[in-house]
Image (tube, rainbow over the protein chains, first blue to last red):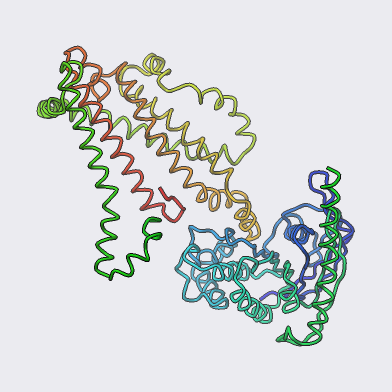
Length: 263
Length: 275
């Protein structure tokens, strides 16, 4: 497994259709770190992820492994919130093999690698099944396997467990923690769930709400693994993050209220 | 199946065997209603035909006898084969041309912009309007009729395929890109399979239009075929032959559509064709 790559964002600004979405973003993510982008919806955290993925162009400097980002690439795997990103006409194994096939890996080797990663995410038994025959949690695990099979140095995850029920999400969080430990890529994980961030991250980044969003705070999570969300330190961190985000949410509500009055 | 779900509780309480027969009855009910409806239609037809002259409206029995007569002298079979073959050839060629054309036009903006004026212009001109031109340019033989069906099929299939290409989810394209797929590979392995349901819809619509086209083409220029049969019957004052031709068109259309539906369900189910 290739080790993680460092991600450096310097003076990054995003404009979409002439509107400034975010600006002044400086972020240095060391190789192998698990970083969570936390915040309410509409604060530009998915936009930031899409910039690192190369789906959106940005002003400023975006470096992954020291190289500037120009468009999507195999070094940065993306796990999407919506499992519509899976290819429904391919079986689970064929989905995992897709990236390997693109790279020209021989058929027998492809099958072995796919089997390995399917087993890693607990889908060894479901190789021949089609995505529509899998549950929501299994579909997201399949997405993770498909990304890992490409051995990316960076894994970008956009609220990957957002659509799952609470129990499944808990299992998935533990599984992701285990997988990250065994393969050690750099992970950027977008979520609006504070507990999820505390459970998984080395560092948690919160953002101010847009328009013109930027980074608000960067909080290191110095808690031993496996993490106990009921420990006093975790609760303290939770309170701090909740207040941070709460301030941003009420700012948005105030803005909307003012706009309504003006209209 | 929603009717079964909503009343499922009642069925569960009345035991397994009963439930099974009840389910079977539910499934047979639409077919039964169809048969009842068809019989009622025949009855109304029969009653109406008693009140007017056979030249104006022949009875169902007279139509049946005419069908038997046309079958026995080989006219009916020849007409079915002639029309069916023209549709099969023209439609198949149309799908073969229309699908890649639609993919091509849907994928490259400049191709679409280049051809857009023609599509916007010709979409309002029914293929029937080209029958005369087709005969002048391609002669009264098979070519002109096959070409007309090919034209209407290419048009409908490519327009639907373009819509399908444009509807491919951005999510899938992004997923493919970050898995390393080039633009050409994405086109072949993501865009084309994602578009299959639209191609099937286009092909089925085109089948319906092929029947519209073939009848008008055969009326103008054909010795054989169901359209020619319907048109020529007027020379003999045989209204019942007209009815035989019309009913055969309906049956043939139904069968052709069934074949397309079953084939797409069987071969293309994985691509999300739920027709």
